[in-house]
Image 1 (cartoon, rainbow over the protein chains, first blue to last red):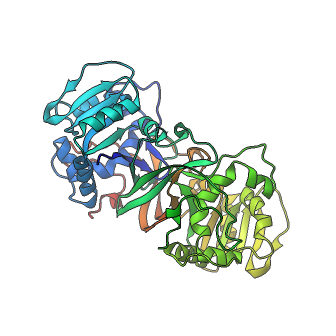
Image 2: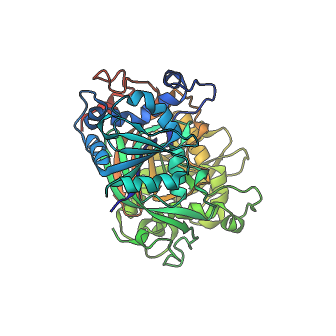
Image 3: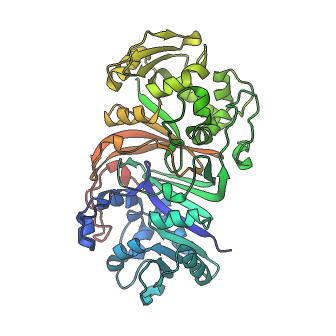
Length: 245
Length: 245
């Protein structure tokens, strides 16, 4: 059954890229010299070191590591992608004539544009009716495989807020960046007394990154408890959180 | 040898408590009804469920789980604590006559106050000369055991920014809160091209929380690489990040 999944790299303090500077030129070489790039390169380095990532990019070398297996698994599981417009703009040139996706990609944008067909099975379809419609189109195109949210953070938050995400994998790079663009934030539309509950599904502990995968259980009221004073806790929010070890 | 350590619970999106509301009364029952409490209760629930935490509070019951072992280990390793003034204010009443620390606690504050002696080995000493001085005093008092930064987030960031932290353990609660007070943030004084590098040291994967422990390697320049195009990466920032799996 098709699952809607997301896989994102972030620093332990929650950033997936450095800070945005509106004065940075919008082209690729401007972005590379701007403040976003150092943080982005740091949190994604584990993937760039991995053989499976390099193969998809047409590069030689790389490590045959558990990280590489995770990259491979992620690409293999996705039958279609949804992507934010800003990520597409940054990637269009460097991905070249044979982008790494090898599947249909649905780009959420306000600007209509004709479908781009690329070599190796990648196509880019521009969807102006919002994230939910892009996920719907990707689901139809995925051939029973998963729909992967390719990024960036804004699209991920929209898909989460709409309750469309089934699985979330966060690759935590062992670094504190202190500033930058946060993967998560107020865009989720949560108040002080509700949260989106996750259920830990898999933890892979590699030397240069920790892969945390969760099933998204959904929106839930946060509850106060008696801090253990009564012997038993009052009204746990999620029964699966209470399971014995 | 004494290590300066910190152990903090946070949501996957980086919050250790709900949002602060300046209109909330500063007493405990006001705090409990305010917007901070639901998020705080959610991210710390794993500890409240643990037998070792309840024992320290004088409560019965709880689970003898790997979480409980981690609580026990953390208390056992600490010979002294440093604590922020706001955390002390919130804890003074509920901790009562026999607080759970059973060791000297050094509270960083602007308000001088006489030492408080409590039962069971806990004392609170109020340090007005800043976090570095508090850590120094705690180190002298720790009898060769660790100095633990008890919290909150502001003190943790100050200790990190000053380069005083040796080990950081973050207990990641499987929830997205969307808003609240962030454990990490701009208080670290990092620019867009530098970070604080961490080395993963231990990952413990429990059903209701993931325990990530790091050695703090220190401040380091972030570098751009060639994204693998040249076969070998250019100038990796940290040799230990490149180790084979």
